[in-house]
Image: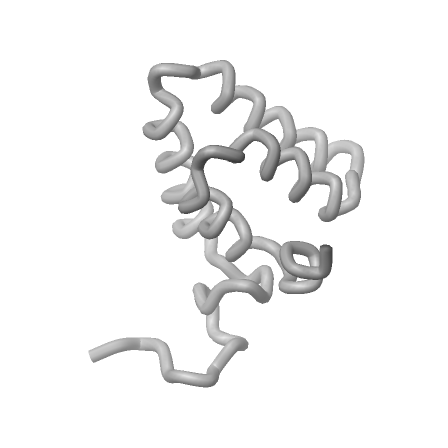
Length: 93
């Protein structure tokens, strides 16, 4: 049994609509931390990008571009990151 129904984009956790839940976000941050365990400076840079967005109200497009540069060789991380952004930010390039 699945808790999501096909075609329903308003449910939490459905992706690409900015509605991912806190648990999803924590899981993603842990995935990034694990991925860059050998290169903690990359994980720290990721956190700095998110903090700057929150403090300085940076445009989401800028945040997306910075994270894309950081995760350049990790397409699965970019795919997961896009789930937290409104569709127009991630795909309206």
